[in-house]
Image (cartoon, rainbow, N blue to C red; front, side):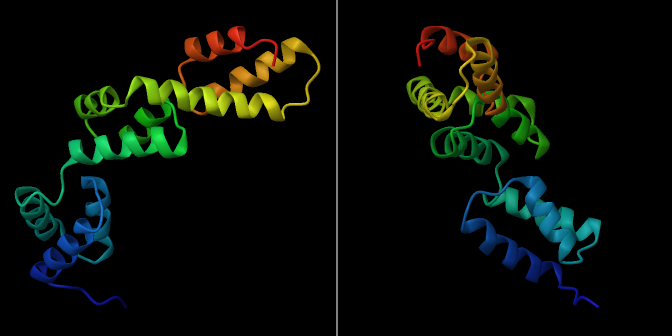
Length: 156
């Protein structure tokens, strides 16, 4: 049997948790639910967290997009899907993706694609191209950009 906590305890715990890193509304709601808070109390805690600036979905989306593009090498398509799966609004997703630096994004795609191309042992040129395109698209990069990269670096 899990011990239920009071709304004030939940607010204190959630504020401490949110202060350690960016959190989105869906993550905080899931945490409040796991703590056994009923819907009305969870709504009150969420309102307080948003009002105090602990939870901001736009700020979370910008941080998430920047980290995934820069550190994980994800493309914009994959980042957008991940943010939408977290319940982030489309306007916030668009704004977060606009904040991703184009030069860093292109460099990250080039690094990932070059690394994959060097590791490939496929001799058939068409199969090699298809595998590279599938790899790039699976990382979340735009199909057109991946296809252009493959055409430009055909000799790899």
